[in-house]
Image (cartoon, rainbow, N blue to C red; front, side, top):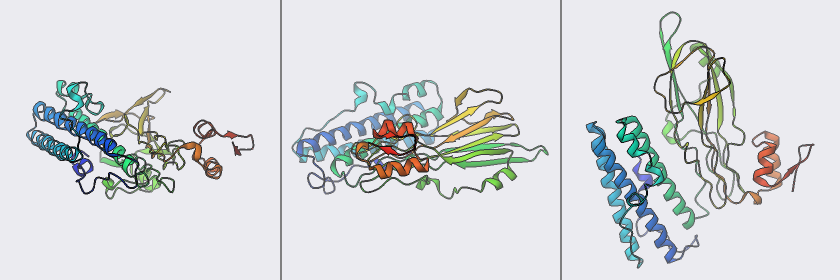
Length: 349
């Protein structure tokens, strides 16, 4: 969430590790801090442009506050660089080529679409959080896990029943969490932002809502490979029985949950729609009131968690366990872990 600014708040001098668990020397620390300064300056400029380009007064004030916060964060980091004998960065990457996290902001502003502007600000914040996670990975390799699926994965159906009464339901997707230095990632679990959005029994959903849930399963191969793999996401498919409207909100699709220490990134989430009578899928990840018809199939697939450590170091025992449980497919095991899966299903190196 863009108001969760603590996630990108810089470390104080006391908290910034220069030696100890990590392998960073003084020059490495200065280089890393300068990269974070650039990230903060990108956010400062991105939010400043957003504040100038939107008409909504609440958004203008919010974005202006965030721009000032990012400027202050950069100032703290610049002082840290000076205290270590370095020369701090003074500009963001936007001064040269637009940073990947804010690359579509100008397009969103030009279109006068405030929803698109919010989405691009969210994306910029995701990029900033990734930058801080990568910095911590270098300094505290044993303590920083892979990235998690990182989104509420909201899906809403609403409309009228045959008797004219209104129905509305909001479902959410739970996904995989990152692996760490000692064990595989967990999941699919909720994020802290999910609040009290629990999984409602499928039979109850179907008795109240005009859809049938054709599949609710773990999403194979969604976890990032590694010495310890990430947690899995899930797959949920809704077959629509009556005309209704679809609303969706899915993030972390362009920048997948990252791996650390040589671990691989996870598959990001995706929402797909197959219209009745068609075999063609289309993405529906940022919809407000998309009209659905009987027979349409909405597929919700949540992201997994990033892996930890080189996949080549994963034990055959754990690879076999995942194969037997269906967490990974034969093709993925062979590609990601370099094993050979025999006709009897046994993995060998």
